[in-house]
Amino acid sequence: MKSGSLTLVRHGESRLNEMNRFSGWLDIPLSRHGVNEARTLAEHCSNTQYTAAFTSHLERAHETLLVILSRQKKIAIFGHENDKRYNNLSKVPKTFLSHLTHVYAGKALNERMYGDLEGLVKTEAEKRYGKEQVFQWRRGFSQRPPNGESLKDIYERVVPYFESEIHPLVKAGGTVLLVAHGNTLRALIKYFETISDEQIPFVDLPTAHPFIYNYKKGKYQRKHGEYDFMRPLR
Image (tube, rainbow, N blue to C red; front, side, top):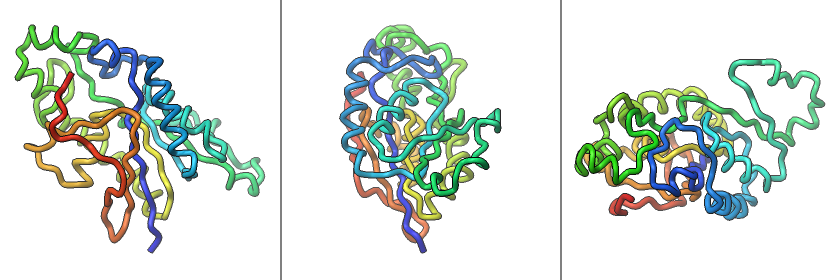
């Protein structure tokens, strides 16, 4: 049986991360610090050649992915969900196909929609709704912010997408890169590592750090990357 691997990366610091505001589906770019984080990460990843890459529909994840791919020996070619004309490789020389890394963007990989919290400074949200309530919305599993999504909602859209689109490539022995968002990746890590609903609120992922999982004997086993159970929220 072939052994594949999956690298999970949370995007670099965004402009709203820098301002300590909720981002959610607001489509904003990286900060200068976030670009530098992505450059450092790209150097770290330069010795790994990915057979495929996945990302969300949001710019901060795209920018991080593009910086990583700029250090790859292969050429990235982007697939488009809604227009198959972009995906026509029938005329590409077969000898060239092995030099390509296929990149796919899926809305299912988007960050959590924070609803009425989007754009708010996090301390302002705590004053408005209460610190404990905001903590539960940010980190809890099943509580939704007003007009937004819970982590459970994220889990229920991310895991099926992963199983149908990403897992088959890893299972076949691929080396796959996924650049997405804190909540997207927390949902997948919960799935891989069977983290309980009670523990998941305390899992915090750093920006622009790789988490590498090997797929062996039907399981994803983390071989690189550490998350923090106790890091205080900003």
